[in-house]
Picture 1 (spheres, rainbow, N blue to C red):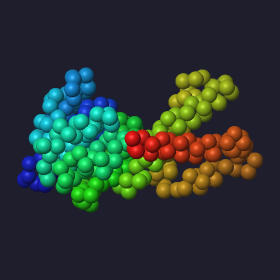
Picture 2: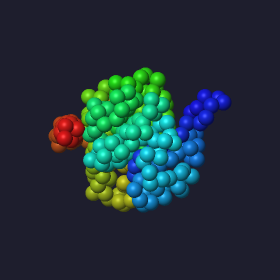
Picture 3: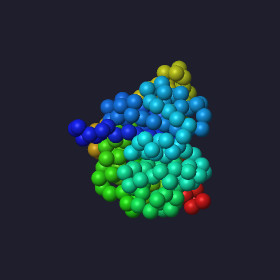
Picture 4: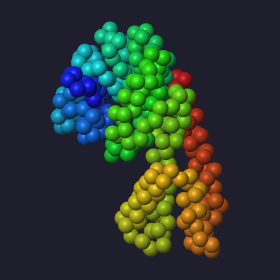
Length: 274
């Protein structure tokens, strides 16, 4: 992370929940940062023990994280974040890169609570970051330049796919990918239950459904194909797939899925305005 001959980057986490742990684990395993150069803070030891198991340092002082680390992830619950930012604002300097993982807290809100020239970015991760297959987007504030965005993007690719977007698209990402994990799980469950209905053992059906989703996603990403092309490749005249697709269309799967993403996005926007 650091240039040759310079001090290594020290990465801090204010908040030590599951997503913070997933990001830290991804950075360490990918060799982006050494565990001994990671410092996490939380009010109690309940989650800090997971960071210590990774070889990271821990503290109960949020200010200590800012005083020790140049790159700091704020991974607290959204309603707690304003008080945390007010607490650490006196020790924020121009050397810091500050990254909020808190859903629904806008860049303008973050900048209002921090010193005037603070370099602030938002990242919207999703749960598969835990297995380093996340889908993440980042948006930068007024004083964060392309170099900070590229630096953060390079780091977070240790946890999956990461792309920079305008802040207006962060809530859409929440509806598509954050909530989308639950939508995909619902579809995976339905696939498996269809096989169970036809006589396949439950455990086997769920394993095959999950692997089918994994393999399909990998093909879409590696080949860069539109899903419609891959779907067409699977269909044959009068074959099993076209009969199944007809049943899905009759059941309204496409419209229901689009409505689910729309509803989740609208709710994310509502929460952002609170």
